[in-house]
Amino acid sequence: MAPDSVSNRPNVLIKRGRKFLNTPGPTNVPQRVQNAMHRDTMDLNDPEFVEAAVESFEGLRKVFKTEGEIFTYIANGHGSWEAALVNTLKPGDVALVPETGHFSGSWTDMAEALGIVIQTVPGSWREALDPAAVGKALAEDKEGRIKAVLVVHTDTATSITSDVPAVRKAMNDTGHGALLMVDTIASLGTTDFRMDEWGVDVAIAASQKGLMMPPGLGFCAANEKAIAVHKANANPRRYWDWTPRMAGPGYRTFCGTSPQLQIFGLREGLRTLFEEGLERCFERHRVLSQATHKAVEVWGMAGALELNALVPEQRSVGVTAIRTAEGVDANRIREICRDEMMVGIGGGLGDLGGKAFRIGHMGDMNAPMLYAALAAVESTLGYLDVPYKAGGVTAAVEHVTAYKKANGPTTF
Image (cartoon, rainbow, N blue to C red; front, side):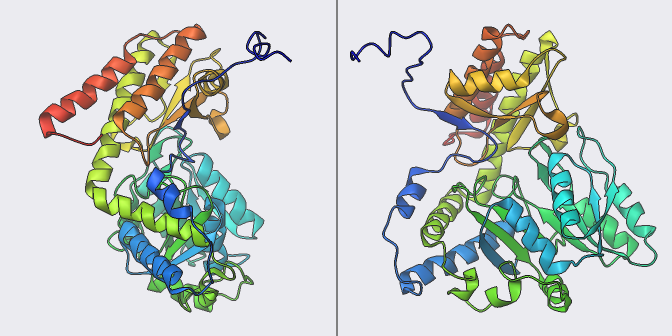
């Protein structure tokens, strides 16, 4: 075949430049984190690795803001869900799940597969959970059948963040003894989370979002109350079991061969978070999310697009879900962004499948990277003849510019 014959074929796209990743997970992995993982493997108990593991566990405690136990699994967030469930609950136990979107439903499905009985608190996919409704359900549980409340802090499908301290207050007001278990997969490292201060008994997370790592590590944090429930729980488990994992940072901590290279990367990712400072990191996410909201609000003036989250204070700082009007194919917008604009964005999930797309702005993300994604979306809207008002990217730029003028230099 002649050297130029492929490029002359009309159906072959020759791509130049780099791809941009603006999905709500996986997220961008900093080069220094990649470099930390690019190394030789070593003996399982090599002091260099043990030191990295200990530092990583302590770093995770700082991010979760807990003095509790940290458990690390070779798994994704679904693995963390299962670990939390099998260590604290058994078949026949009842868990209360406030509906917050696709992922509260997915956690429910997993629990039911494990024989756990689910009681749902109905909710909206456009607003955060209602703490009062959680309190009401617990107050009506006179026999104490409910053993845990499963809360998703930020649901990435709806891009809504719920008020965890308000849930704990509602639980305390009833005097109910259920565990409060919180999924922080999409919130840890992007927005403030205070496990001990907020009275969370079990928190779960994964590596591929705000922690700026590749997929592959799942985490559980558990306080003394949760550990006591775990020790009294005879539910069969092995790989997920917390007890042997509390033995120390060696072979038993990982229930077998440790994910050495991932742990070196995790340590480096946590170091980058602490160098930036958690509060500055949260502020960066807040500003970039607001810039995205400004863009969507401008585009939406033509009537074909709108933010899914109705209440501004409940909008996630890590991801923005954008609903499309009847007749607008959200999946097609995503495909053109990915395949022709070389920008990865998220699709709609569950009830929003084909009816929404999502722009991620979490993890290793700065304003110019966000502008690229927003420009790709705006260009795609015009390309597909989706009604929109031009100027969304400009609105985002102006928001970040105004922030910089008011607050001084930033690195984003």
